[in-house]
Image (cartoon, rainbow, N blue to C red; front, side, top):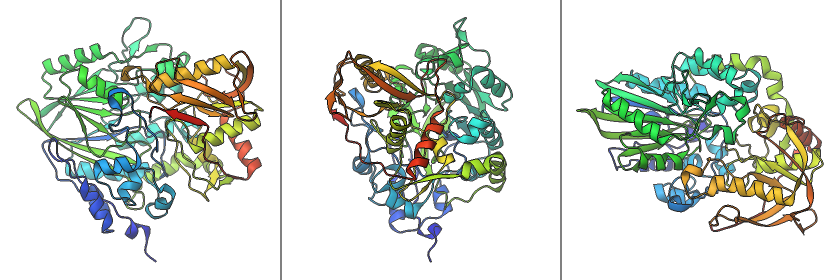
Length: 565
């Protein structure tokens, strides 16, 4: 029988010098069914500096399945531009063949069918193999972590991030920036950061009392590489106290702070930086706007919105790199830096196909050690799915449909709400659902499932507020998630309208009645940013629901009518 390693068919060529792309090689090798680890790692070494970018790992130590979104709408000047292009349109933009390994890695169509052949992706031991290979080719390559690393799994929750800290320290990054890490609480974050053997960067992390840069987090760090001086400037997630519970990290304030970013760029240039790299957790559209405002940045390594793009996007003189999420990709970026400036760039988005890339034995052993104390809990089968369970999409994902069903049933609610987060692996039809799977899509430090009464008017206010966070045409007002998921209620959204006018035709599904602005409804949800939220933990609610169902089946969600896409 042919092995999956022999069956798999993918390679990725470099984006060559500025403005050129070799991405089509991946599709050609795919069509020839000729994948090997060497092909995945092949790279025409270029210039004198190499960057290795990983981001948004979300504590996924082991290989997973991860379906890319079918809906990722752009507004304003970003409408119709990557990353707001999905499916067939994305494949057309990059010359990707239907059914190819590149189609499987980068788009959503036929996901479950293609998954049978191409298998799982990611795994930090496979990521380690890629990092080691790049370092073997260029020993002084810079490994840069874009954040959302110490969050997102059962073991990460149980160890307060220590499992990820241990594994990442073994990979020896040179710098990282932050987002979900702060939801461990500032005391724990401070404890970890003080012990990190690499740079913790964030030019926009300020002391909230004094409104000045926080001492623990440096704005930038210099590295001497390839005969050039490299400045790496950190940019943490700007909207922390809004999108996440500010009471967990009251000592810190954030914001985009593009004026301060410009000051930092000017400062490092004055200090002799030949090339300036921003390690960012802004989200892609915010990075695009910032690149048009801040001058002097050569490369932005973008994170937060989980976009995976096979080519850099050029804004002015700044190249923006998007490296996906959940350990599914690693980006290699080679720079030619001469005479005090960047003369060229070559980039490769390397897909981490777990059955092609061999695991690094040292990191495999370390991962097993982190998971061993929790092996029984992680592996316990709670139920089974007949449906593809995925998270990504602007308005719904089947994982969140299932979570909303659990909230409606277990909390006896009229309406359920699940946050529009983008992290969480996928499961294919026929898969068992383990406790680990449930935690992979629910794990957070504020997971209480509340039950309260809300008026129809207040529910609309919530929807309007979240919609503006996503569909405001000014990227600086976008927080980079997806629309809050709703169970038990349908609505119409016109994404072209201004704030307060996007949501209409709200309907209670169980009766077909229009939502009354003055009437109260029982609403259950989770991930409230309010301190003191009470209720059972969401993972327990979902586990109880799945146990009762045995085998879950999620029907297509047609309750949201989208206008203006």
